[in-house]
Amino acid sequence: MTEQNEKQSRPRAGAGRWQLVIGACLLLALGGVYLLLRSSPAGQRVAGELFSVPYSQAVDLTAEDRAFVSRGTLIRVGMSRPARPLEPIDFSVRIEDDAGPIADLAPELAFNMKMDMGRHAYRLEPDGETYRARVTLPRCMKGGKRWFGRLRFTHAGELHEQIFLFDLQ
Image 1 (tube, rainbow, N blue to C red):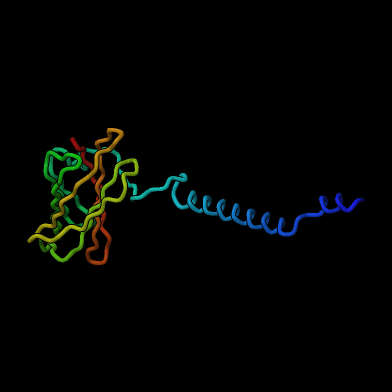
Image 2 (image 1 turned 180 degrees about the vertical axis):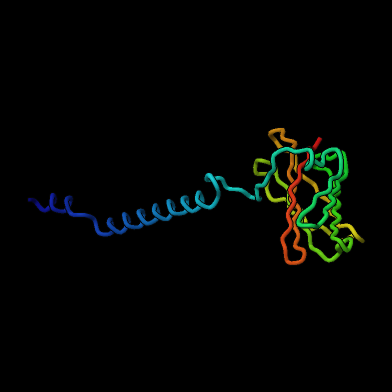
């Protein structure tokens, strides 16, 4: 072998290091993709929680306020109408047990559609015997109008949760 052929057939110094660095970067990238896909159902990334209930007039607030019972606790949920996207909607919640209205809670409202519309969560503020929140919801770019609301609070050491729905105009 001539000296020139010997130089061409020898690996260059440092070539193995670059292959190692590139391989490590690919492994890190693949691991990141795996973690992202594993972090939510069906590989979908969601900004807000997704929850819904099948349609029932008993949970539909579109036309009128509703009352629900959760473990002996009466929950009355009301909202201003007509409800429109990008305009404030006033929600009122009254929570009662056998002794009457319960005033020392920290109820929260969260909203979503069947598709991910981001995080929309509100803490209800006490107002006498009622809790209130002013909510503004976005317009669905696909034309959806049905929103689901979830009221959550803890009373007497128990978590109470009520899901309802309504349609925006």
